[in-house]
Structures are given as C-alpha cells and as structure tokens.
Length: 209
Figure (cartoon, rainbow, N blue to C red):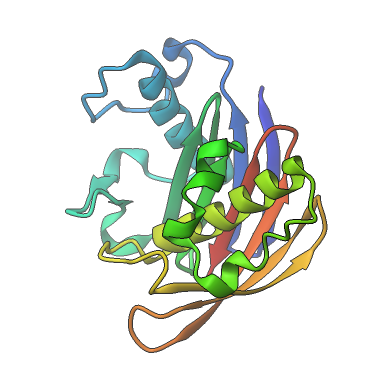
C-alpha cells in the first residue's frame, strides 16, 4: 500500500502522502466520485486525495464532503478540518479534529523560479542567495511557493494576495525538514508556522492553527 509518508502532528492532527500506483477502481471501492472530473489522471489524483482522509482518521465521513463557493471542500459542522493537495503521481492530505489546516505538495519547476517575483516580497527574495547552486535555488523557491500555497489553503476563503497578505519572515531547518515563521496579514497580522519536509522528488508543507 503506497502510503509513503504519515505524520502525527499532534493528538488531533495527522498528515499523509500517497504515491498513486493503483487503478481507478481501487479508489472507487471506498471513495464516492461526486465531481465530474473528465481527465483520467486528474480523476486519479482527486480519488487518491480523498482516499487518504479515512486512512488518516477511520471515521472520516467522505460522503458528507461539500464544496464551498471558493471551491474549498469542507464538512458541514466541521467534525474534521482538512486540506488536500495533488502533484504528479502524488496526493497529500492533512486532517484535524480541532484546528484549521492547510497542506501543499510541489515538484521543483523552473517556472516557479521564473515567477518568484509575483509571489515573493523584495525581503523574501533575499532568501534566494545567488551563491547557491541552481538546484538549491530551485528547491528553495519551490519551498517558498509551497509555503504560501499551504497558507492559502489554510485560509480557504479566497481573496488573498500572495505578496501582500502572506509574509515569510524566517526559515529554520535544513535540506530535509524544518519550519518557516510566517505572518498572515489579510486582516490583523496573525503569526503562522509552516512545517516542511523535502522528499525524493517533491516538497511537502503544512500549517496547523
């Protein structure tokens, strides 16, 4: 079973990463397909992400998931807060019975580095040290993008400017795992800590608050 990573964040929050190797029928045995997703691979990603939810918490009620106007999936009554991300042949999910959450996975891409000026403030661009190797620059730019995606999903209500409302103040960690000290400034400044982990071919980040 390709659950390649699972992490118990605290007593009420878990995250997981799934490598998609199964056919669609494998997921359809447990996951109701409510969305009309026509592209075969995108449908697999959708199914794998939802399959992960009861893998993390057995009593997660998949059949109760609704989609908000902002396209964020949610449970009425919020028995669980959750977030899902897909990238390539991977799906990630985070679930909490108590706290708001967000998760993101990204594979390093030159495009992320090229558009970094669109989502990073001048102060944040200083993290991208020109003395780094090309691979290190790409990995770090991907982490910064993923961090802001996690915060965006944590907020969940849209209307967020990645440069104006989400600020990264510091990075604490190494080339395997760590955390970013951030501030969400859509309203009154709110401190957030985004955790990260580098995998073989992607970066995974998540926030719990």
